[in-house]
Length: 526
Ligand code: NG1
Ligand code: MG
Image (cartoon, rainbow, N blue to C red; front, top):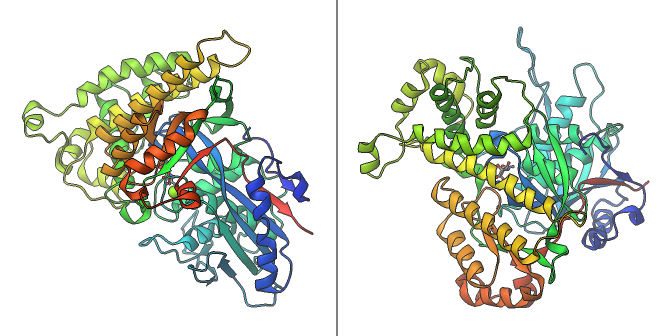
């Protein structure tokens, strides 16, 4: 999948039929015309995604199981003449966001500095801003495609229009980064031969500019998805994706995944140092300490992930390619070994399952300065205690649940042994429930509203329910029998206080069923 080219369509009819939402919203072209007085030359589109299972394990390089959703970001754009004012003008179709203008500057090369970015753009990482993600896309295009001595990028006018709620765990951020990356590539004539895999790579690196050290799930799901299938995405040893048909449509009655927004906005960029980035550091340091305990060799300067530690532990070879069956057994065994990370009884007795910075550095076996260089010099984190034991338990058990979820989907493919549809749905639902519990209790990335909403979803007839995306707010995803969706929505509305005043369209905005949608594309208009 990753080797396929990013689709470039030349007519709206080529845009997948099922994607009515996108088709309707291509009216963004008219809005562009009204604003800038000429037609856009391209529309770049990238969808959000719902993660069905596999939370906070992409940056530990374990496989995840998302699907693109129909809600998306569209960017209409056209070049301005090269002799016009340089840089980017980007307007937002939502009138609550003001137009933004920005110009990159050529960085001054420092003697001896290799790999230094040739272009700089100021990106505000202290507040959540939609335009930061546009700039992040631009940053990567400039630094990958406009090296020293090459022509300058074309000035460009843009109009962005989106239907993915921000800060909701549906990856509006990655969708903006992917769409803007694609738009800037197209308008600068750099799209030739662009594979999905390469676009994911660029988009992942781009999004990090906004200050969150995320894994690659969102960008991969936004770029690689096709309608009707979820994706099993693995990141190790390299990015690969497998399309997996969901059994939910073939069961009788069929089932659907319903997204329900907790309406608690989780601003990942702003709270990164006590939440997302802290988890990235905890899992990386946890991996080193576990490797020490298991006698797995890692270089002093090496920042290995839990996935790599598992691989080396199983095969004793750092280049193992991870056979799936052994993976499951490996995950089960390593979960037993993780017990060795449990803090001593006196700490447990005090209710504090974490270790202090000083204890963590001692456990790593590295001198303080080296520890700092390796784990803290590139990121800002803030905590009195680091919960390495619980984070490790979450990561390995969640990785195992992803494989079990995937197996259930594969086993119920039409060509294989028919198993009871109801049983399959129950089993999928149970895995989702366990995933939520692990996110909440071990990874501490839930919040009271998400716990309440998922419990209510289960009580309202869902087979299973969990938070989706980074958590700390945002959306839940529940597996619900299609015939019960209306009843389910009504029960959520009656039970969740933030929904009580919502009716009709307003309720449909925050609680909606979703089917796997198509991935990113470019529509070339002239
Ligand atoms: P959301 O919440 O959609 O931004 C984030 C990360 C993912 C992944 C999930 C948790 C970004 C761009 N994405 O998703 O890589 O780690 O959290 O599973 O930060
Ligand atoms: Mg995001």
